[in-house]
View (cartoon, rainbow, N blue to C red):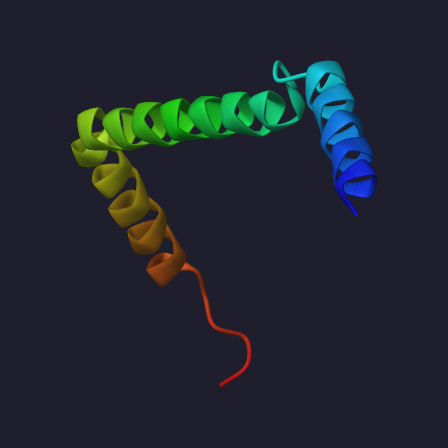
Length: 73
C-alpha cells in the first residue's frame, strides 16, 4: 500500500514539474476584450462630440423627405 502511494506521489510530482504555468490561451481573449472596450469608449466619445451635427443632419433629411410629393394618396 505504501509503495503504491509512493508511486502515485512521485507521478504527481513529475506531472506537476512538467506543467507549463505560463499558458497564454486566455491572453488573446483578454486583449480582444480590451480593444473592444476601447473602441466602444471611442465611439461614445465621437457620438457625444458630434451629437449636435448628427441631430441637425437628421432634421434636415426629415425636412427634405417631408417636402417630397406623396404619390400614394
